Structures are given as C-alpha cells and as structure tokens.
Image (cartoon, rainbow, N blue to C red; front, side, top):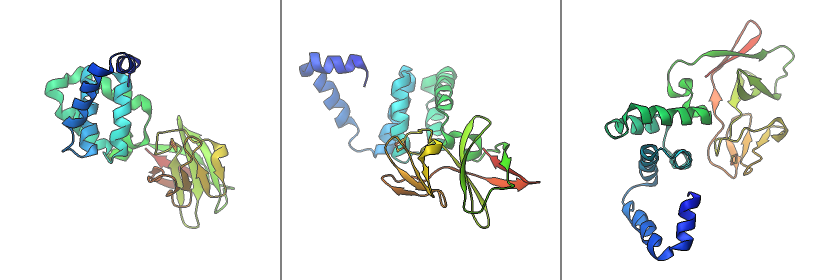
Length: 208
Ligand code: FES
C-alpha cells in the first residue's frame, strides 16, 4: 500500500475504512489467483509500478503462470492499449524473473556458454555467472543440472555463500533447496528454476 493510503487510513479511518471493506467484499467469490490477476490489470491501468510489482508477486505465488499473466495483459488490450502493456512488460522484464524468459515460456531461447566441464567433479555444485544471469551448476552421475540463482519465492539472487553441501538456503526467508533435484525442502513450496543444458566439445551450455 502506498504511503498516501497508509496516511489516509490513519488520518480518516472512518471514511477510508469503508473503501477497504468494499474492496475486500468485492472479490469474495473469486479465487485468489484470479483476484490478484485482476489487481495486476488495475495497477497497469493506473500505471503504479509498486502496485504492479506487489500484485504480480501475489498472483505468481497464488499459482498464476507467466503465460496467464501475459494473457491477462493482452486480454485487457481494449482498456489498456499497447503503450500500457509495453510499460508493464518493461517492468516485468526489469524484475528479471526466470520464469518470464522466452525459453521458460516455450519460445526458443538462446544457448549460453556457461563453463568448461573439465575438472568439474561428479557430485559437485558451483555458482556461476553467465551473460548476466546467476546460476548454480550441479553435476550428477549421468547429467548436468543448471538452476537459476533467483529464489522462486521473491526472486532474491541467492549468493555463493548460501550453498552448504547439497543444500542451498536463500538468505531472505530461508527457503531451502536440494541442488541434486532443485526441490524445495524447507519453509517453501516451489522448486528452483532449472534451465535445459547440454555439453558440447567440453563446454557446458544452458538455454534460456
Ligand atoms: S526470497 Fe528466497 S526465501 Fe524469500
């Protein structure tokens, strides 16, 4: 909520309280995902960046997929127009959410040269930077696993120090992940985002 609304709630609770009660009562028959997607559209219409970021995060946490967010934006074209949709997409891209990368949305992504495979032991995990993206690379017996370093909770860029053995702990709210599977093993619910990878001539490549 904006500072101005916080101020009005405190200064005029008798009047502004009715406004919030009205908003709360409006969406009782909608599921949380739909409610938050509608709020995303209303924030784009009003062009409030903070509100867009807030409700986008809520919509994703309530199970909305990036494709559904884009559908909602495009369906609102008659109300929003292209300029506001582009404004919203620019903000979403600036958030650098891995699930909005073209590769994650089913569009052909680009292959990126992550590192040499020589000397990387089976069972080892290493953090890497590649073309502006943070990664955790794990080498299993028969495959490589490349994860985005952005936490699936609130996109914290998880640092190298967060890795202990096979457990990665996000410093912000302590969601924990097993780098052997990418699964969330404590506090949270969503796994790490895994990128497709392949080895070509001794180099590990990843696609996003
Ligand atoms: S942002 Fe990582 S646990 Fe919340």
